[in-house]
Image (cartoon, rainbow, N blue to C red; front, side, top):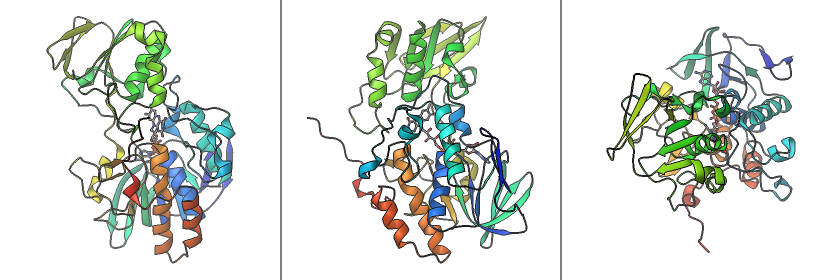
Length: 390
Ligand SMILES: Cc1cc2nc3c(=O)[nH]c(=O)nc-3n(C[C@H](O)[C@H](O)[C@H](O)COP(=O)(O)OP(=O)(O)OC[C@H]3O[C@@H](n4cnc5c(N)ncnc54)[C@H](O)[C@@H]3O)c2cc1C
């Protein structure tokens, strides 16, 4: 197998790609989760593994709209053992490496490429996983190139490439924000945005910054939400943006007013809300309604929770197919939602430890080191606490 780093044209031999071999682990997805989990596997002593990606390392981040930046800030806080919020590897700081506090998606994709090269992660790019089955104790992964067998699978294929498309009547007439490469390039002056959480407000802010008139609709009230948990309420970075002059001048927020349907005729889009209001525009509405998530692709290998997310053991393993693990933003335990990097990264080592231990490796030192960096979260009783209001 070759490790191909597109951005630097580095091609180096790592381990042989051989469908007749039995691997210890195959990681699917080379985003923040897949690369982070792979680094943890390496540190835990797992050797016979590789990462596979249908595109390239960091492909989802590279596709973010050009103007979109991380809402979670990076800061080189590592010197006192507090890991940079956007880091996926112990000791690493994107703030220090990139000299940027709120990276763009393209910058973060480059950061992931740099990490993959630095930690010598074996990666097979441009290879789609078409199907996964389990026979006896082995998973069979079907790629175009052949079928590979492995004891363990880490599913880290993310959400971004699996957008939600059928949330209301006529949703297919709208453009999902995940398909926008730059807000500056969108034609039109009057925008209707469906969904008012992070992506919707991000879109509204950039369009308003270009002088466009914007209406944002949400079935709830994400702008008035009182929680301090960014998985529930808007992040501080986003709230600050709503105070900019361009936002107050050009953006109208419609809380508790979901969209019932969108129609298109005679060159006009018509949007009807749950309050019975009707809005018209010649500009294609934007849908910022989130993602189905890639876990739908492997739903046959997990039990499903009532909310549709995979039911996981305390090691983020499938409760029906041992050896099948999940890493990334789809992790749910009880009411806790691990959708940010600083949340789900704390579970990479839990998975790596489970796999390494199953292969007979001693993992105490590994667990202690990761725990010391806040990168091994096995006690979930701390989750869900709100900040004090002072
Ligand atoms: C606009 C936006 C802003 C965000 N801002 C922040 C932020 O500020 N802070 C934060 O912590 N999080 C943020 N997030 C969330 C963050 O981006 C996600 O948590 C992150 O992308 C998840 O990483 P991942 O590795 O799980 O998935 P991805 O980054 O999507 O990586 C999955 C990889 O799997 C590959 N893949 C998918 N299917 C297959 C298949 N069948 N076969 C092979 N390969 C496959 C893809 O090519 C991709 O490279 C943001 C998300 C969005 C959309």
